[in-house]
Structures are given as C-alpha cells and as structure tokens.
Length: 165
Length: 424
Image (cartoon, rainbow over all chains, first blue to last red; front, side):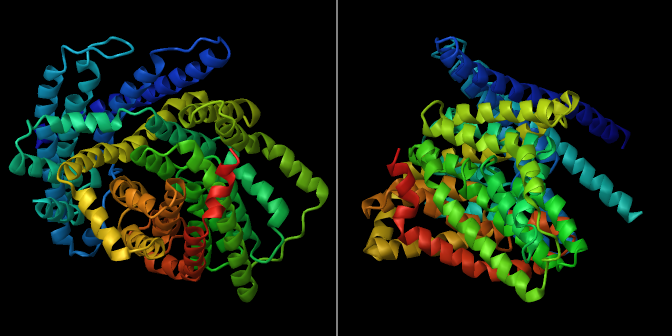
C-alpha cells in the first residue's frame, strides 16, 4: 500500500515536469514558425530548417502529451455504452480499457525502440540530425503513457477501496 | 480479414477505449496475424502520418483559441454583439449566435467556442428567465459555426488527408458559415418571440455602439490577418496560425492587459495536451488507412458506392445520411480522417469538386456535434447550464430542421461554397 502511494506521488511529480516540457515545446514550435515568417518577409532569406524542426517538435508534443491526456481523461473516446452499464460493470470496463492501453503502449514502446535503431544511421534532410532523435518520441512517449496507465489503475483500486469502507 | 479488424475496432471503441488506441490496436493485430510485414513498420506509419507541415496549424489554432478565451477577447465580442442585436426578441440568444460567428473566424474548435461563450451567456440567459434547455441549446448549435467558418480544425484534417488546398477550403467555408449563422439567428428570433424571451433590453444608442466597436476593434482585426493573409498568399495556413497566436498574445497582453505572462506556460501546456488528444488520432488513422489501402478496401468501397448510387444526386444523399449517422457517434476529426480518403475519390468521379465535398462533409459532421448520444457541444453546454443531456437535446430539437435544410442547401448548391474560391 505504501509502495503504491509512493508510485502515485512519483508519477505526479513526473507529470508535473512533463506538463512544463510540452508547454515549452509548443512555445518553441510557435517561435520557430513566427521566425520563419519574419525571416522570409523582413530579412528576405528563408530559414531552411525551421519547418523540419517544428514538425519533429510537434511529434514529440503529441506522444508526450498523450501520457498526460490519458491521466487527465482527455483522450477522445466513445462513451455511449459505458454511460449506460451498471456501476460494477463500469469498473470492469474502465479497467479493461486501461489494460488494453497498457498492452498497446508496451508493444509500441518495444517496436518504437526497434524502429529507432533501424533509422539511426539515417539523417534528416534539412537539419542533418540523426533520425533516431525524432523517432525516440514514440518509445519515450509510450513508456510514459504506460506508467500513467498503471497509475490510473492504482487510483481506481484505491478509490474503490476507499468508497467500500 | 478486414472484417476481423473492423469488428475488433468497434468492440474496443464501444468499450470506451480511446479512439486512437482502438484504431491502432486493431490494425496492429491484423498486421501481425494477416500480413508478413515486419511489425515495426507500424510505428513508422504513425510517425509519418504526423510528419506533415499543414498539421502544425492544429496546435497553433488550439493555442490561439485558448489565449482568446482568457485574454478578454470573448467578452468584448459579446459586448459588441449586444450593442447591435441585444434589444431584439431573444436578445441574448441572438447575441450568442452573432458572437459564435465572430469567434468562429478566430478559432477552429467548436467545443472551445461553446465553452468560451456559453460560460458567460448561458447563466445570463437563465437568470433573465430564458428556459435552461433553450439557453443551452441556443449556444450549443451556433457553436458548430467554428468548424464551418475558417479557420477550422476539421478543414485542416480534410485538406491533409485528401491533398486538397487548405487555404481554398477555408475560403470556401465563409459563405456557408454566414448563411447558417443567419438561419440560426432567424430561428432563435422566432422561438424567442413565441416564448416571450428577451426584448426587454433598451436599444443601444450610437455612442454605445461606437464604444463597443472601438473596444473590440483589435479583436476583430484577427480574422483580417488570418483570412486576408491566406487569401492574398502572404502565408500558409500554418504560418497564419502562428501569426494568430502572436496577435492574440499582443492584444491580450498590451491592448486588453488581461493576459499574465506567468500563466502563459500553463496555457501552452494545456493547448499541447488538447493537441495530443486530437493528433494521436491522426497517427492511428494514418496507420489504419495504410493497412486498409494495402488491402484495397477504399477501392472496393468506392466501387460499391459508385454502383449503388449511380449519379451524384443519390450519392450526395447517401453521404448525407451516412455522415449524419456517423456524426451521432464519432466526433468530426476522427470521422474525417477515416472517411474522407474513401468518400472523396468517389465524389470526384461523380464530378463533385473536392473543395465543395469537403464543405459538405464538414457541415454534415458539424451537426453531429449537437446530436446525442455523442455530441461535444451538447456535453459542454449542458454542463454549463447544469441540466441533463436529455434536457439540452429537447432544447436543440427545433434547430435540427434548420440544420438539415442547411445541409441540403450546401450539398446541392455548389456555388455557395465555390463562388468565393473561384475569385481567388
């Protein structure tokens, strides 16, 4: 029990940091694109790498953001059936959803790493960075989502126990 | 084997597995069982689906909307609308429709519009004796204008998945959006007249009108920058989105002075999470589409659709019907990502312009935002009005006739969508 609570606390800390990171990354995308317009019209010379950088940063935002989205129940789902099932079944449904998410994330984590290794000898066209850097968003993002799915499961169990007593 | 994929996907969907996860999981199982592709190709397909410059407009328009919600812009737009239509029957409801029209030119998300405008207007309407169900409905329905009036996230997605110019679709949405806005204005007027809502506010004099215009002028300049910039070819929709964020920051901070720099990073992070929840669906849909295309499903579906419809009139009716049903259960973005690549080529075969067809799809799916059981605008507005989903649905019922009429009008009168782009 103590260990579980510690895990939840730790994940809250991780998510706090993650929240700042995705905010900063989106800020960077914004700055890059504004500079792109500025350079083209004011300095009369186009930046060659800003577009690529913005694209890769956005991919990072998406995979990291999903981890927070899962924990905050912000991922878009079809909730028609769940709303109408009895409370007990609802618990089972939600648990199953987290379990499916967990398995999927574990899978994407593993194959994300394999894909990262496959592309590691390639470099990007504009910036010339190794391609594993943008691809690393997938394993890292899915790992964080997996950890959050576990946290959400723990939370569901502790809440159930709390309401039972 | 595609049947296995679809059954698995729908089972997961109705278990309430997030849409993106359901699509990805079902596809991965199918790739693993039925094909001999190396399985890591799956992560590559998700990556490449997101690796697109036009898609970057999504995080930025989400961010711009967030900044306008908090930077004092929505309130000034409401003041402006009140000065002009506040005194009519159903004054507040009319103000709601007009504000949604303005707001739609600045943001691309309907749920955000309902939240921003509804949280101010719905309580005000209820306290003035409008019925809660009408108050909630009269904001939920015009909220969908945000998807029809550019900029619009569903339009960006349609452009990216079908290879149609996003700038052109944006311009094409202007007239259909204004027409729907006027029709909704007439509807709230008629309903309010019958129930005796509003009409008790004194008409604003020209001095008050001028003051409202002056206060909101900075905000109203936003659509000029976005649409004007795209129309004149100064920047791409993605760059326009970045400039919109910059503009919202400047007027929120320096003109209206309601934006605090300290809280900015929080807004950015919130917008990033919203972005992730939309764009992870794009990644998964990219994977799903790749697998379906590999198995010639879009071609087969296209052949089937061409055969049973025979001509463009029947085809459009079929599309209208299909999208209305799909819209009841799925939100617009995921429906467009999956269906646009299948439906659009058939439309082109029947001689329908892909730009016009995009507007048709979006107007149809926008109605799905206000139909139960899954309608984001209804969810947001019934929460604000503190009533049940059933109640707010009764409130939007009279609007359905208008929405359906509007869908048919836009489907069968191409000039409404195509006239403005033809001037470009």
